[in-house]
Length: 173
Length: 102
Image 1 (tube, one colour):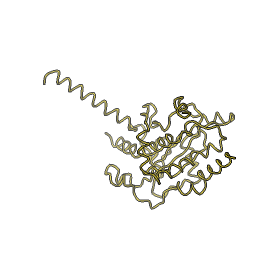
Image 2: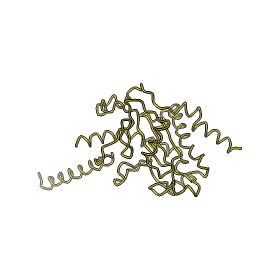
Image 3: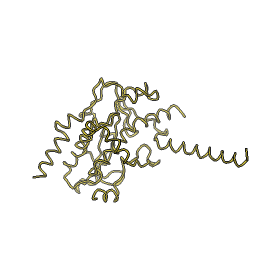
Image 4: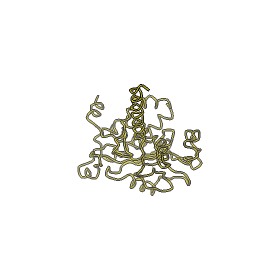
């Protein structure tokens, strides 16, 4: 009994009217988000970005015959979900149910063929695992990318600065 | 810094929002990290339903996100993993399972 109502609620929240009310794709006339508009580091370079897109692995327990297809490159069974969000931390699109062995690019292509509409002239920010196309803005490959790597670069700089500094102190300059 | 590196840095700063939102989602709903024994049709419905609930909470309690983000520990990505990393892609550990049971 409880299980039946759990399913009804789950379907209402995952595809029914409640879902459609709260998880909505951005309209074509959506204004530039304030975090981009008010920051000269981003404006006007990213003014047509309407959000960011990424795939993520959600752990799952598939039946035995689907277990091989669900195993991802990290070694556990998962479903690969495609998520889009806007800069206000709202989800705008969710596609779930793909096996963990599927690549982000394949899921994106499937979503585009179905119901992921991206207004003309707008784009999402995506990582290097996504295809390069007018609707997605991907980073340059073969260049430093991640924020953490920049953090490390800075640390190295400070270490060398400290070394030089202590050397100068040592010399009594 | 070359122009490409500068672009990549700004791109990473803006794209960070999706890494954060996935971290928050998995922190909020542990059923996404420690999977239930339901059939796959039910399990496939869980992420959209929970994303919907996340949006409802964002709408009716906008300040709540700050509390969650203060609690989320972002694991620094491993350099060899390139662009992938953080809590958003973490493999569930035995500690996660213990936490879920508790």
